[in-house]
Length: 328
Image 1 (cartoon, rainbow, N blue to C red):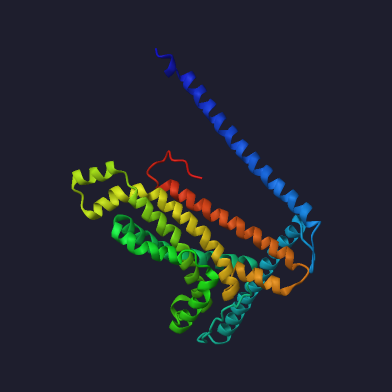
Image 2: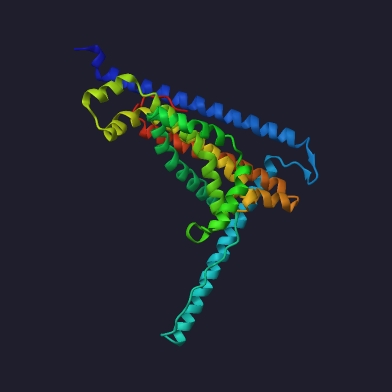
């Protein structure tokens, strides 16, 4: 009997591997927690030394209090919306009791924007712009990577437009959107302006990384494609695309981070409802609670950006053919 295949030994090896895994997870959690505690401590110490025109700079306790107040405002708005629909339903029931054939037109509830509704608006805007940028950047990047002539044509244009700030794009986009008037098909004008600005600023990392990933397919795989006499489409789908997936997702993660940063500035200037407009309105408000609310918004912006990056990383691990590749 092979001692290495003994059931007791296999069970012990499994338990040992599980113990090592949980120790590693515990160590990572403790390191993450210690980093957060250091950040909160530094924030508290720094805030006690900073005096602004609106008063003392808020610390973690003041930000937590404003977070609770923002939650209360959201719940109060939801209660007002429920009461509005309930009154309409009661009015409709009373009309039908008097006249069963009466027609009743329901009125839409015009809710005041809350902090959480503006979070959803920002996520909708950034994902729309990011998806549009990806639909342009990935196919174009693959074509550029497959053809050296196309690379020579497009590379100067990419290097020309890549460093342009969203603040420079915004006036041009605003004028173009105003002249074309896409608001009826795409939503409000400010939404279209924000989406187009996000798209223009976020497509370049994906475009460049896709082109580089496609152009760096190993020669062994290219030779296999020639031996099998694969068609252009099958060569692209079977050989090129799987090899370029890591670089493509690197570009997508960079583009998503840029899109999230650009969106906040675009919402401030275009006055499109969202987190950027929330920060700007609180800054203009200048109340004693404005600084704390801005701090809450800044933390939420950072957490949402981190969450979006983690979701993209999970998708990369799911799609990538090499499951042993280390992704962070």
